[in-house]
Length: 285
Image (cartoon, rainbow, N blue to C red; front, side, top):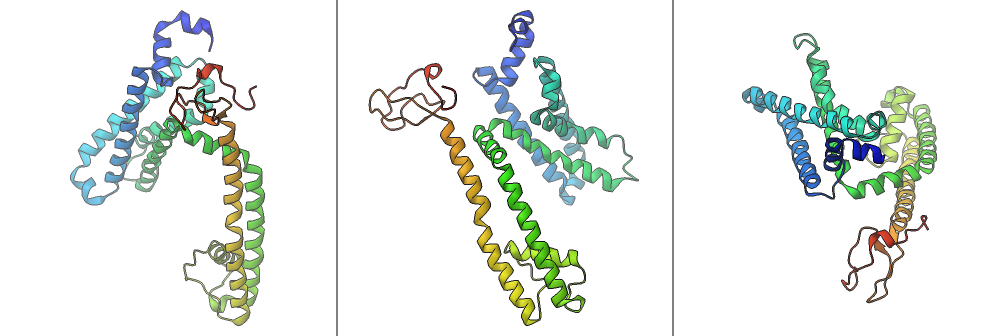
């Protein structure tokens, strides 16, 4: 962060440390308050979707929704105000999530309820994106996200292979079974192949001929075979990401290493570790 920014405006500095930081008492209190507000706003959304509750407590739920939206709006404005790079924050993942958290309620005001009930219902349900705001406060979620990003090429190749596979099986079952057995089109047949290869098996479509059942059996076996592939890819990337966050510091008491980057005490014997600023992290040495 720019030192000029830190010294020029103490109010921005205080807001930045409180809103974006978690190492101060005020920052921790702000995060806890925001987490409670997010969970409560989601509870209001769930209760509002129940017809009996919505009919009886409509005014109260609407008041709570406007209150939470006002709080999240103030939070969003303050983040833009105290951020050293407000445009970069607005374009970031969390910036977009914060905007999605408040946008639906404001959009509802522009549509008359008598004519666009379906649109309003869809927009109001978009408030569920507020749950993504919780990701900011789950430190381990960042490791999961980075692991997914690292494995995105492998996952894309796997997804493409599965898409080709279900297209082939769907086309074969369409030719073999035909409309008389419920496979009225190739898209419907591909839907059956997806349901079968993922081992879900709704049972709404089922082959009737011997050859069709053989194709179905092969599809199910292929499904069991490929389910472990994305799990293995993600597990390997997750393990690598977690290893990269281990610090190369030995415990002065038991000489064990491999501690988390924010660990203050040894996980083996409980002795105090070295100062975090003096530790060496793989890739940064």
